[in-house]
Image (cartoon, rainbow, N blue to C red; front, side, top):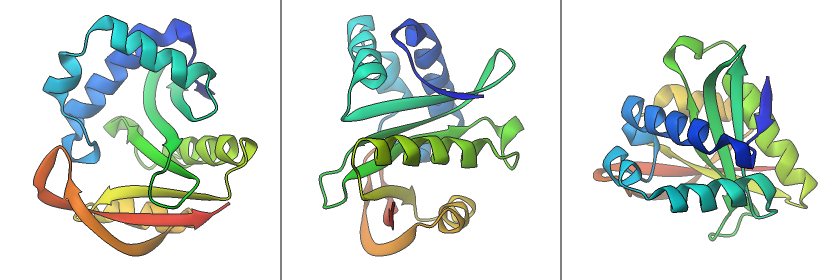
Length: 162
């Protein structure tokens, strides 16, 4: 099951985001230590915006009671309407369709709020993720930037029409 985060998911969202940052640090623009140090009030504000706003949404994937993935969608500042962010699936659930379900949820939400294009950044050496995003209809734009959480690594931008 995949659903949008709710304001009641504060602790769950924090826990899964921290788990994701530990498992796949190069998939995020932030770091585990930065997020761990974030005050509870900031987490609460983030979850509230992600649960109720039209400029940002976060989706959680579940198998039974366990949260096994997350993905977010935010306003894009480089020309696309929205940006897919914070995509992560637990290692035990990779290759099971959870990632595709999360992307579908993000695309559906973005389309519902009027987006026509959605972009993302993916770490350049993450070939598995790049192939997944290509299968989901994203194309490489040629834009490259240092990964904010580790400037020694590059990330590339991908985009697709909705």
